[in-house]
Image (cartoon, rainbow, N blue to C red):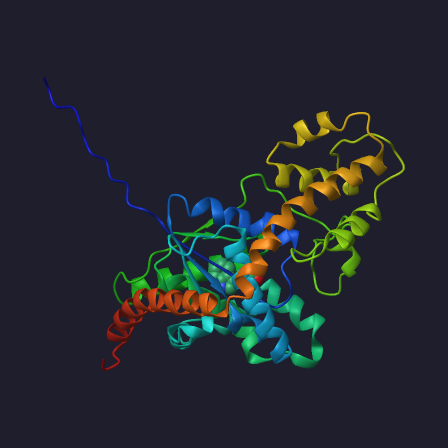
Length: 338
Ligand code: TRP
C-alpha cells in the first residue's frame, strides 16, 4: 500500500496581548478582549501581560495599581486563561520592556509619535499631566509586542494606530540592520461585538469619566448587576431587535448573545414578544450567573497568595527567556557591547 500519510506540523503562532490595570475589568473587556484571548490560546503560543508600566502614564494611586494588577491576574485565570498553556505575567517584572523601549525611542520620529490619536485625546483629557511617558506609550507597546516576536496581536480597533507604529518600527529596524523582528498582525474580535455603557448606549463601556451605573464590572455582585440592567436606557418602542436606531436594545442583545454564545438573530428570536423590562431582567440574570461562576474562582485564587506568586514568578521567567533572546540580538545589531 502506498504510504500517503504526511505529517503536517503547522507551527503555532505567537500571540501577545496586554491589558492595562488602570481600572477594574468590565464586561466590555471580557467581550472585547478576554474572550478572544481564551479562544486564541487553544491553537497558539500566547503571552498575556498585565501592562502596569502603561498604567502609570496617567496618575494612579499606588495602592489601586497594586490591587488592580493582582485582580487582573486573578481574573485572567478565573476567566479561563490557562497558565500551563499561556504565559501570563506582569509587564514590570520583565525589565527588557523598558530596555527595548529606549532603543525603539531612538528609532521613532517625533512626528510619528505626535500623530497618535490616543496621545492627543489623553493630553486633552488630562491637561495637568501630559508627561513624556504618555507620549512614549505607543513605543512601549511596540516593545511589548516585538520582544516576543508576536505574529498576532489581539486588540480593540482603538489600538490599530499603535499596532501600525509597531509594524513600522519593526520594518524600519529590520531594513536598517537585518531581519530581527516579526512584523505583527492585529486580530480583531470576529463578531465585531462592542459593548456600550448601559446608561449612554452610544459611548463605549468603561471609558474614564463614565457613570459607574452604566458599567458592569466583572466583580460586581448580583444585586448591583440586576440594578444596573433594570435601569438600562432603551427607547420608546417595544420591539427587541438590533438596529442603529435602538442603541440600548442592540447593546443588551450584544451582551446577552456574547455571554450565551448565541447569535444576535437567535437572541432576537428568543425574546420576541417579551417586554423590555423582562428582557432586561433576563439579560441581567444571564450576566450575573456567568460572572457568579467567575467570581467564585476569582475568590479562591485571590486568597491563595502563594499560588498567585508562583504564577507571577513562572510567568515572568518564561517571558524573560523569550524577551532576553530578542533584546540580546537587538543590542548586538545596534553596536552595544554584549
Ligand atoms: N494599549 C493597549 C490598550 O489600551 C494595551 C496594551 C499595551 C497592549 N501593550 C500592548 C495591547 C501590547 C496589545 C499588545 O488596550
